[in-house]
Image (tube, rainbow, N blue to C red; front, top):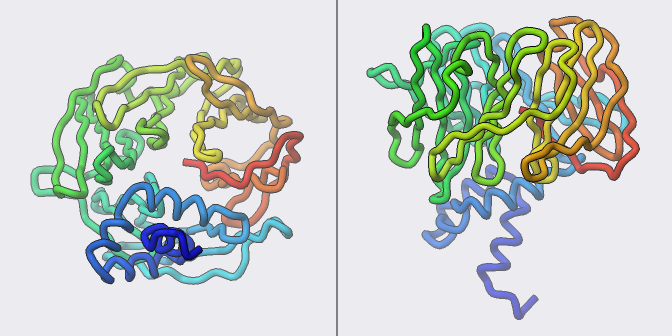
Length: 332
């Protein structure tokens, strides 16, 4: 230990402390501030928090926001602690649109304003401007959080308004919006296509784009965050026998997709990309019918070889997986 540089010792210690203590430690000196602000530190700190005993679920319900520990032994939630919203809001007003490294992009439903919010430190930032940037319309717009090569956290906002498209990038470092070109098929901008929130992996934001009827077109649109270019890749080869939905997830820092299809019973397969193709990782049995209200707030967890499908009311069911267990993953 005596042979290790002080820089390495500080790094190893601080990647294991709670987020609030990391935030306070930035004020110790300029060197610590620079170290704790790097994307490498954030990534290592987050990875060391991703263990089953440290998992928490953030629930927003009407006027309250609560954090619940997840008890995987009993497949349930533990006692909650209340998180106070640091910004003005109304009843049933706050919607989470995207997240990255503990930072949330949320929308205030009564004003359509976008905000960046860190529930752990309570810091927040309004993204709306007098020239109409930073306003989000549900079911038409889509956002994705990412960080570029310069460690600048940014928001990509795709607006679809009556056939008029706008694609904008917000930079936290310079605190401003700017327009960028959108180069892909114009039909994907139609309200007939449902876009997922952006999922950030390896310098790219990924969006699933699914047409809203049986047998429709389904693709994945990719945004390279450094070149700011869009491209399209194929969807996993699932049968279009019903409505199709793709949920992008992070499994041990690798991109995966839960692709579901069906009508009254849903079939879900887990896929991962390899080059230009998708490889099926696992299949689950057909899921029994679930009410639409419960489908709207489903959350998935994978740990110790079991896949838990849960809502704010608790566990719906468990799927046992015959495969090497994952530590955990977060759906988007």
